[in-house]
Amino acid sequence: MRPFQEADALDFFGRGTLIERLAKRMHEDHPLARGLAVVGPSGSGKSSVVKAGLIPALRQGALPESKHWYIVEMVPGHRPFEELEAALLRVAVNPPASLLGQLMEDELGLYRAVKRVLPDDNRTELLLLIDQFEEVFTVTEDEDLRRRFLLSLIRAVEEPRSRLRLIITLRADFYDRPLMYPNIGEVLRQRTEVVLPLNPRELEEAISAPAIRVGVVLEEGLSREIANAVVQQPGALPLLQYALTELFARRRERTMTFEAYRELGGVTGALARRAEELYDGMSSEEKTATRQLFLRLVTLGEGTEDTRRRALQRELMALKVNEEALGRVIERFGKFRLLTFDHDPTNREPTVEVAHEALIRQWERLRDWINEEREGLRLQRRLTFAAKEWIAAGHDPSFLATGTRLVQFEEWQARTDLALTDEESWYMNASIAEHQIQAAREAEREQRERELEARSRRFLRALAGVALIGAVVGIGLAIFAFLQRSEAQDNAERAERQQAIAEANAEEALRQQEIAQRAASEAQSLALVANARNVLLNEDNPNLALALSIEGSQVFQPPLIEVERTLATTVYSPGVRYRWSTEASINAVDLSPNGALAALAASDGAVILYATATGEEVMRLEGHAESVKRGGL
Image (cartoon, rainbow, N blue to C red):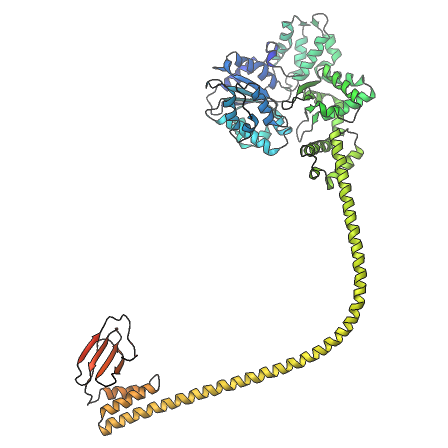
């Protein structure tokens, strides 16, 4: 039931062609040649062909320098990085202080760790065999840990200067799982070798050759009959292996006979028959312990076949069953190789597991147990995981089951006969106790709230009586205040209206005053220019006419058209002594106090001074950037 190991190489037959093909694949000129996946159905012999076939061939120099390689193997389990650390430390030349920390540091952790554990000769390489690679997806529960582990493997394979070679064995029904991760999916797409069933000739060789090595023969035609029973059944090799073991135990002197073969029930019946025989010979306590034991050693498939589960012996012995009976059951099934024993690589604690998935498939009683308790087993696994988390967290109450999950656990525990471990029982009891404490606190809080509510109602009733009296008084005062407020509002509104009328009247009076003033200014301006015209026509005094015109233009702004016309006529009339002009327009003209000088302000920024007696230009002031306006000299 166990895979062939490297030490069994001399007894391993029937896979010569496949071994040569695997070695050739490892020597291909390919960017991913450092990685190889050996894929086949459960029981097809994929682990055996690598361990007892390919690895011995590599040690004998099947590839250049392969006889100098360091070779280690591992199974992923719950903590793949810790399993990897344990494997590397077995061959480390100079064991580093913290290899696990380096492996988990980043995606190149494995690449660097391999360089550290190998001799510094740049020719020695490390071959890492990860057997039962499907455990990365069935046993490793932390998705982030799974992704980091897979990426670490890929980076170590892809790195051009890597000294790692990687071989994984993977059950065919789990082939799609790694394809969901792009990096390793690409490696599997290009670097997979499929383990096909043995053909009849290879099967006969695998059956008879090991027997011949120890001087045992099979009756004529027996090897062919056994081979025909398993040919084209890729998962039947563990059954064949177990049947041959039982047949060897029942041999007659040095001959394995047809009679013994038929008593076993053939290849497919030998395994289940042995398990059933062991079960039938047990006491009732041992039968109960057997059921609890094997249900603990199964991992339920999610759309795939159920698989075996490696469990700590400490966990099994903590089950609430007869401890002595359980010990006898483990010993008896182990004696007949239906259970295998090992040690956890991280803490070296003893472990127990079913020897092969073939026992799960072939033993009908075990299949019935699993199908009867499938949903219960899922809840049990959740409970087991939760209990471990709670213990690892130092019994932190926040890790206890609450709400719907606690109800689910309690209902399941009430109806199931699956045994719990001490840790699981502690977890359940602690969860229930914490729930009861919280429920008591909630009840106490609700009681306090009810008392406060009753006290508040009494106070409110007393307050309501006082409030009623106050309300009556308040209503009277409110009515009085309302009447007073209404009267005040009416008075305020009347005052506002009267003020608005007064303001409107004042604005109208101001407007009429402005109109009257403007009309007076306009009349004065027209009178001045009318006098200017009379003086100009009748008295022949242009200077007086000019003065009257200028005054008329300044009284009313802007000047009326008649005023501007009279001013222009006066300026250009005969008798004016001097006329000053510039290229730029004139903004303003002014005379000095004694009348001796006249100043003209031009729009180009210049100021020009003229002598009024002679009309000559006296001075020109320039340099001002802007137009000059009237402001006096």
